[in-house]
Picture (tube, rainbow, N blue to C red):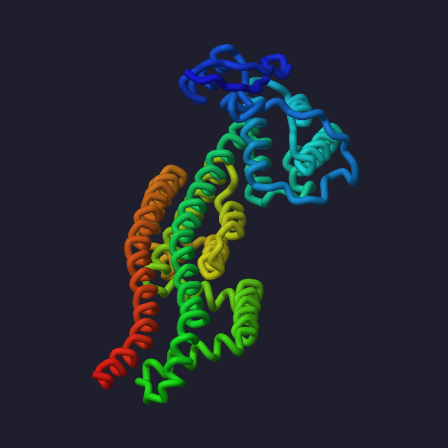
Length: 409
């Protein structure tokens, strides 16, 4: 049994702080729910208290100028959904959020939204005017308002954001280890060329012996790096500028996204990631009552690959002409065929939302599998490249020394 600190909201909206012994955080949350409390935060006692600090005075404009982080948006959405499900009115729920908030930009944003709502503005419009929420988020809330179920819309948003965060985390985590290996490889080669090779090159020059071609190349590379390191640094900075240009220029980004879809392994992974994002987003919007045409326009803006996003936009235009969504996407040949055939079944049977959720789950699992496969290939490949680069430098140094030893004998 461990001690946990918690912060919760009672049924009347009053904040509750306290401690509880339990086997896990999940058990604390379960016990709080049984007591009729809405848990807002649970932490082990060793991690400190979850109680909010003294309230800060708001300053500046109606909405904060600083961007609110996605984790803060998710926490705000989750807590607001819980309070609305418990029967608290929207204004009171926002007021409680202001009482417990710990982040000044988020506090300013919620305060601005509350003032707008009190002035008669729809909740979705107030969120939109804050400039902190995506079109996807705002339209989900707008559909929830229209159906009288804002708490349900927020609950689906939390699920969507958690899934998106998990998928993004898997991809990022997969890139960390290869990036570290690549950095270590480059650092090792640079260290050998700068500190080891020059010492042997001086010895070879004193001996006046004819050096093998491999040794000449390595010695020249070490001399160039030692004398013109600034040129290498400038070249690296130019490379970074070019990369930034490619990612910010629309035509260059379109070319990159188009070519990435054709790369071995990478293209398959990108297609699966985007298919999972497309299916999850479209299914969530349709399930909350957003029309198909509007959902497509919103989901298009959530996709990272420009080519696939453009295909979704063109499919939406074709839908206006009465054409089939899946047929148009199949003709583009950028989405996985299996997923689109599943969607075609959804179109024909009227079970689009259900099948979109299934497709999203399938491709989430496919992404995990593809990432594991890529890691299984990349890790030994990077280690082999690093070992070969180091071995080339060592052989370049050792070959002339062995030759000189043979001549002495």
